[in-house]
Structure formats: structure tokens, C-alpha cells
Length: 155
Image (tube, rainbow, N blue to C red; front, side, top):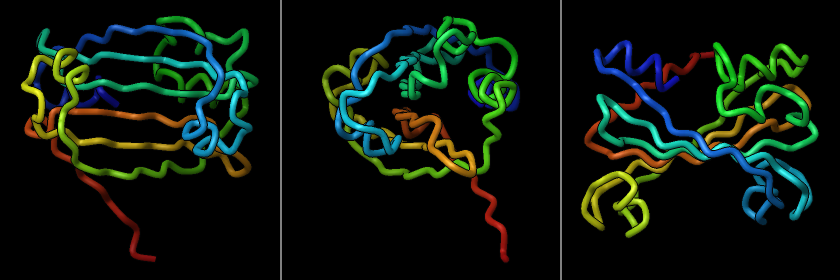
């Protein structure tokens, strides 16, 4: 989605990725509907627009879905983790996003090169199949660099 935003916005994207495995913290376990401490794959990313950091994104996926797949590598290939999940038979049914605003912590401000207290968008997204949650993604974006657009069906 970030690369699509880059293409639409006319800027060059770059992403730094850290991949690790860890026990699911309580909030992550709750979002994924798994037991706390269950092994999850963590994909922590810093996203750049024209070499300026603008967004942090950390995805958590149940390890039983990612073990031995390209999702555990830094480069997941075209279409990213969602394409790899689909290829493995986990057909995505819906995304649920909760959007809040917040103020930059010292760690976030340092990572994104803004002042402590700058306004951020905090987006928590969960990706669902018809029978389970397959990812929770915590995005932190500099508020004045992004615009959110949602299309909602009327039915």
C-alpha cells in the first residue's frame, strides 16, 4: 500500500525492514485472537518518501502462518505479505482499521525526525480471513504528510 501511495503521490519510496520472532504481547495476542506468549513474526518497518522517514509500521503475524514462507524474509516479493498469505490459501476477507491521533514519543520523534509532541496518525489494522485474524499492523505516520480516504458500501 505504501508503494501505491508513492506512485500516486509522485515520490520515491524506500523501506527499511527488521524481521524477528517473539512471544506475542497481550495487546497483540488479543488483536490476533491467540494466547499471550504465542510465537509471532514481527515485521518492523521504517518507510521513507524521497529519503525522508514518514511512517513506522509494525506487523505481527501468527507464526503458524509464516514459518518457512517468504513472509519471514526481508523482501516478501510483489504484493507483499498479503499476496503471500493469499498464495498460501489464506484468502483475505476484510481489513478493519482503527484510526486515532496522538503525539510523538521521544522514540517515534527520533525515528521520524520530528519534534517530540508532533501530531501523528496511529492506525491499527487487522487483516481477516473468513475464519481468523492473520495480521495486526500498527502504523504511526506523520499526520500532515498523509490523507486517509475510505469508501464505504451503502448496503
